[in-house]
Length: 370
Image (cartoon, rainbow, N blue to C red):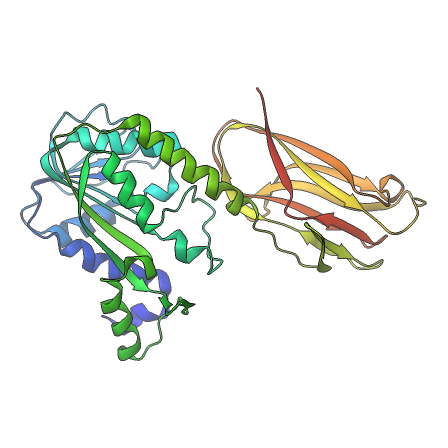
């Protein structure tokens, strides 16, 4: 590996994924990419798969078609959960690289159903994605990830979709004897090379899993697949929304209640996060706030808001006066509506320092009927 790739983890991971994709060299004449981007992507796949690749179908509904494509590439403007412009049994290989973690439950089920349809009998499904069993204890997150699957989960779900797993290996070992290892590679070859080699046999201990599965003749069990995917989402979504950070104040616990508190004169964000994606809908962010000072001043005590794009775009905001804050927990509601999927959404409380404040964390968010 080029030593310069070790300096940036994203470059390093891309190089490892390149090595995995290159193991499929010569195994596909017609390859379908479920999700793709610029010309570089098609060049990358062609370099990995080699001259056997006669047709590369890129299915993408959100990115703009590149101005130039290699001769074997065909761009289809379909969502990957409904690839209606691709005929049945057309592809030798369906590749969804770092894609499934961006899908909502219905989209994920639809994608697996469509992958089974567009693949020829015995065709190959190839997926890779971060492993939640590692990303969660590492406190690693991505603002556009909706669900990250563990190794046992993805094995089961792909099986329900009518596939037989032929290989499920790891990319970049990050757990050893129960202890989490550093994410960035050390430059000394024995360290990183050993972790790369060991990962292949230890998917459950690796940062990314890489799955290959053959299409079987049996039909997908869509009802059971949907039920299990919904269970995973119901279990992981609260974990994603529980991410909370603070730039001021200190953390405290009272029984089962976690909260952030600040002193009088202390200014800054008592809570912000979770930098999570949200589907279209109507929502309410519930801020539970209290103080240990009397309600006397009409000065602003705090600002509650909903933001995205790392705080650059404020979606909704409400300013609370000192005279409105009580000495027992009171709920303050900030409503907002999304008409499209939003990424990196955060809920924030900024204390002005005019009075001591406490806010329960994480901020409770509820979806409202439309």
